[in-house]
Image (cartoon, rainbow, N blue to C red; front, side, top):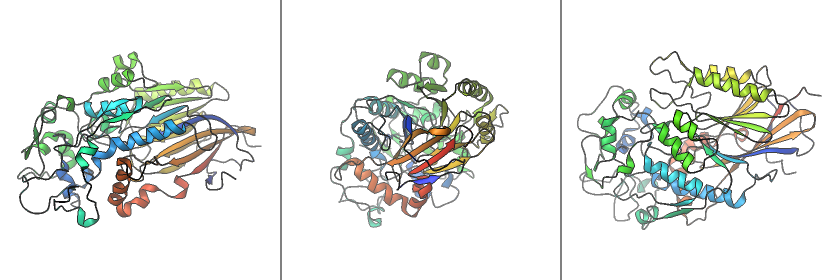
Length: 475
């Protein structure tokens, strides 16, 4: 039987199906691609070098050895989805690919343009020339503190098993052509899409640094804030002061606000967003199919910081959209957001209009049409039941593309007789050739994850799973 490798979960009730059921919806879920401009002066990679100190740990990660490869990995997954085009179990063509945020890393216009070009089709490139992968004399004698693929450079990473890669900068900086998904796609903003390093609001000081030519490679002299996270939220420019390298200035490194983010998605044909969303600077939207409503919810906190929240007006809008589906027999709802129940915890600014996870979950529990909630943010595979008075729903967290295990997830909704809904989840690798840049990224990501790879991969019940949810009373 094709379902033997899958873990069957009946936490919300149900019974073992006797057949495959009828496919009503097929989604491809991807998250946290973190397309990165590794040369940006608005990045402060030096924080990573202090990561073992608990005072700096809340800001991690600021540097990964494989960051210059992220757009190549996204492109490999898009190519695989285009070539396959169907969900693995039902063989139903994908109705939609949905990315649940952190599509880029540093809220920059050039990062966003590269991401959208890969999703929608076109030619792009992201240069790594001038970034930390290139060693020089600025930091004095001793091993280079960042991974340098050049065989002639002694760094702190090669002794840990990181490889020499000939022509690395030229290869990763080269042109990339994407044919796009070839079927509808959508994305919603995560904290890294709208906040510098996913944490700090845009402000004139950090914007001037971002588009300029002065890049900081080490901690500014005497800089030792008592609370590094709070200082970064309020004053990110302080982390990038005291230039140690000159690079080419680039206006494309300017920050992205929400209206620009939405308008760029509309221009590239993303599903669910229109000129009205641009005018209102509102990324909350719905995408309707024959059998389902997919609701995209922006959970970014207006005061900054990386954890999320929702507004009271959003909850009222959500309630109305769910009531519309509750009254349509045979239809169901899938919620998509960047932050899930474990990360909707942001109370920065103590704004009474902002609410956390318990209020959003309470709304979802009032509507029997809600069967699944797709989220990202935590960079790990995890599947959790939320039992409730209206039948409950499954929260499905898919790991990031930037970090191990660098996978997407097919999510298929199958209806069985007697009102049993089955959600079949399958983890997907890009399967790029071993000599490719995407394959190199995967290898380096596993090395970097180390012992944490087990947590990020999740258990068997978080991966290839069959999730049951009765939509009508059980027989």
